Structure formats: structure tokens, C-alpha cells
Image (cartoon, rainbow, N blue to C red; front, side, top):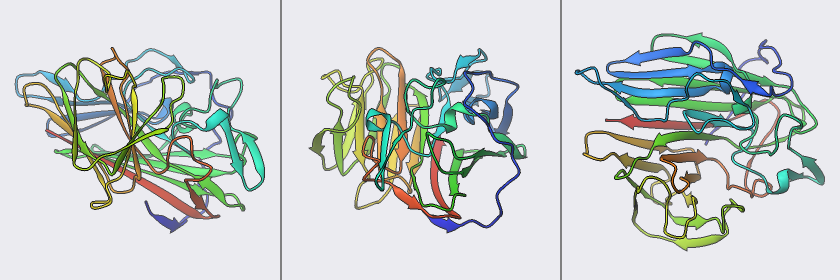
Length: 320
């Protein structure tokens, strides 16, 4: 997690306006490098819509659940691809931010039924740079009642022969300090037999599917392993874990090995302090979400970004 002064004046990208009710996939930006292919949908919340490998026999292996081409409600998106979370991650308790004596209802009505994951995934982003291996997207978000700060975000997606780098940043363009958090939200394929391994300083679990923020802590030393039975994380039926970054390394390295041992995906982040791990029972996808603050505790666990300052988050996915 890094801070920097803003190097440039505010961009000229148009205001996204109110959150649209529907997002429609268009012709994607297609990146390719070696046998890897990535597709990005700027108009659908800056989603990485596909991440796949083409082998020498013409077969295709999708690491992420492909987004598809059908329009979808911005408030009820397909569980596919990968999207940025900003200006905070996951959800706030009661859709409410308590900030320096103010109480702000962050749910944007009527487009959103909850504050889940913020606004980055619900808006159209502008393309500011594009090449065969990289693209850069921008979101300019003026102040609104649900978030009374003006911010500008950038997302760069760079594909090389070994994987993909995603760099997310947000700059406060308001005169007042802004509470800020960032996250990335990929949906990996999680078929039966796939194995997840990662290390964590401590694991927190949600008490139920209705209350999805940390409440039950289990300190764990060493590596954690989860084997997929086609969805889900534990025998208690809870679909969400919250992992604290290991103190010794200060970074996350979470690896998925697919059945047969021929393919793997490793999520790496040195900027995240939490990794949200999510897989509902019976749903063959796994979310590994690097985040800069604790879910549900944004009021007490966030960065404060002053005017012109920038908060950054990186996520690297290595692929074999």
C-alpha cells in the first residue's frame, strides 16, 4: 500500500453520472502474450472478463469464470471475471459510513440495493491507453450524496507470458480528507478436486451467510489447505473467510492447483492487509480478494487520503 502526491491535474474524462441500471458487454479489449489471452470490458465496471491459456492442441483453459456477452443488472452482476473495488471494499455495516461526526448512507438508490463493493464495478470506465499487452482505464467520479468526495481512479492491466498484473489507484480530488480503501475481486474456476493453499497470520469467519463480516477468529500458524468439493470452504457451511496478512512476509501468496496438476493460478499482493476468501457451497467458483481494509470495519480500518494524494493496490496472478 503506497501513497503519493498527484502528479497530474484532474483528467478530462467525462462524469459517469448516476450508476446505470444495466451494463452491457461490448467488443472487449483483447490482450495476448504467448499462449495467454486476457479480455477487458471497460464499460462493465473495468472487468477483466476473461483470462485463459491456449495450448498447442487448440484447447483453451479458463482460469477465471468467463463473463459472457449478455447484459446484466449493475446491482446483480454475473459471478465471473475480475473487477476493482473502490472507494472501499466489500460492504459497510448497515450501508452506513460514520466519518468525523457525520453519518453517510452510502447505498446509491435506486440503482443499488446495497453498498456492496462500492461503485467502480457498476460504472463505465474510459480507456486512456491501449497496446497489445496492456491497457489503462480511468474512472472520474464527482462527489455525490452517497460519497461526498470527488475521486479519480486508474486501473492498468498488463499481460506477460507468465501471468497478469493489475494496478489499481485512487486519487482524492476533493479539498477534504477522504476515507479510502481498495480491493480486487476475481472469480476463479473452482471445480471439484482443485486445491487452495495460502498462509495467514489469523483467519476470521463470518457467523452466517446473512452476516458476512468477521466475527469469529481462529489464529493459525503455517499453511492452510482447502480442497474443493465443487464449492464451499468449510464443513460449517460458511462461504467466507477473512485472512490477515502474514506478519513475517507482509504479503499474500494464495495458490490454486487444478486437478491433474497441469494448471495453477497464484494471487500475489504486497499492498493488501486482508485477503477475503469466498466460495458458496454448490457454486464452482472461488474468490481471492486482496483488500486494504477489514470488511465491515471501514470506519476504523482505512487509509485517509488528503487532497491530491493517491492510494494504490496491486494484484499479480501468476499462471501455469
